Image 1 (cartoon, one colour):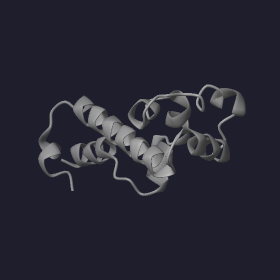
Image 2 (cartoon, one colour):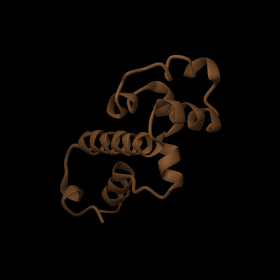
Image 3 (cartoon, rainbow, N blue to C red):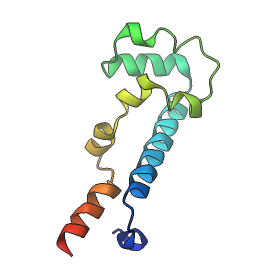
Length: 100
């Protein structure tokens, strides 16, 4: 499953790649919701406190910049994507490295 990346000697690259993948997925989540106001209600539904969402709605930021925000990051975290079955590169590499 790791293919090319199983031979890597610096696992931090996998961590950085995984974090970029998560940000891209958060971007797609925001795009799918269709804007900041729908994002507000989705984040509220996911349990983010309303006091943390106050600056989110009146924003002119695009989806890519919103995807790096702390509210979006905590709602759509690695745990969220792991529950959806997303493959975790660093974890798979560690499992591979420990068996070889």
